[in-house]
Amino acid sequence: MYTQQVVDNLHTRQDLLKQLGEPDQKVKYPGYEEWAYIRDTLSVLNNKNTSDTTKSEIKLPSKDSTKTTFYAVHHTYIKFHIDSADHIIEYKNNGVDLTRKVKESFGNTLLEILGGTLAVLVIIVVEVAKDRLDN
Image 1: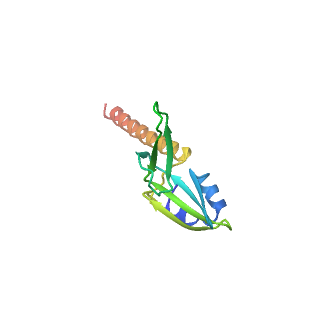
Image 2: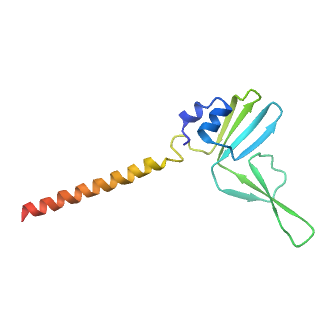
Image 3: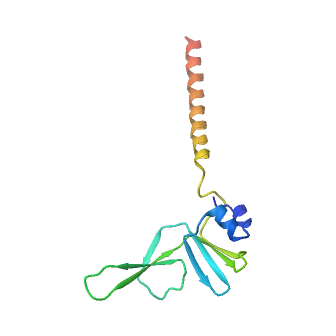
């Protein structure tokens, strides 16, 4: 679940692990570590000069002696910067909609389905009862 309220209440590395789980990528920098939670499909680029840390290197087997390196660049992600004391010092959101839930629990989905089914059954019972009273 990603809502603005959840993200704003994340203050430590433990908060991240508890709410969002293990990150998709971890990158260490001097003084902090960057955790990225990726939420999109990949765009594949043949470009070695990109500096985005949310890229994944993909080496494809080739029949010739030259090796081609492709970079898969993610466009929708949240990055968190964590200092050496395990505190989140900032986060960067790129395209993740924080106004709604991205992932709902199974229980909520099941309740919505059962509620809709119950509403349809009530309508059917009322219509059948009306038909019997009219006859």
